[in-house]
Amino acid sequence: MRKLQSQGLHHITIVGADRQTSIDFWEGVLGMPFVFEQPNLDRPDESHLYFDPGDGRLITIFTNEERAVDSSRTPTDVGCVHHIAFAISQATFAQTVERLAERAIANSGVKDRGFMDSIYFEDPLGLLIELAAYRFEPPAGHTHAAVLLEAHRIRVQREDYNINQEHLADAIETLVARSSGSLSDDRAPKTAYR
Image 1 (cartoon, one colour):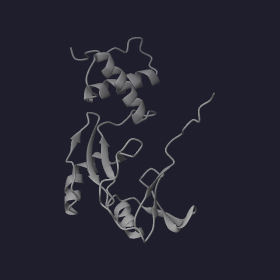
Image 2: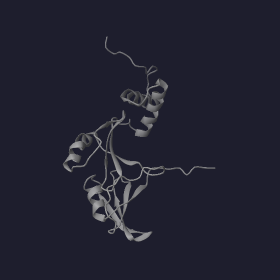
Image 3: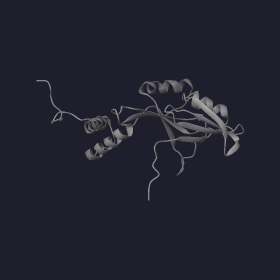
């Protein structure tokens, strides 16, 4: 038996209401360029809108002018999507509360997740959206996931409750030591000041 190996998220498709609500939210609030549109090839009475969330992947929305906007929270039953998270820079994150307030969008306020900062709010159709900003940059040649995997190992070994800044810093140091050669025989921490 063999796996069907994933190589990244291709796209997420959401059932939307009318076309303009989708454009106003995904491009007008979250800044995702509206890059492509065609009919929903499985339901010709719907349109299929495509937005770029910033990494060249896609968020797509099925729209139908007959569907009304319903801002009730989307279901969170077993098997349902709880929320979708989008990466933003620390610079943008610092402005998030203010920019949501400009539009009178209720939100969770800033949430400390140890390795990232988050804020939550609902889109016009009740889908919970998270804007997340990592508190670290992975070393060259590594991903955020690689740093988190190593930080997790360190956290578990130390029997700490959740990942924090110390775990991240130590994980980055470990990944750099593993992936970068050195002419030194001893790469242990030292005091250079005498």
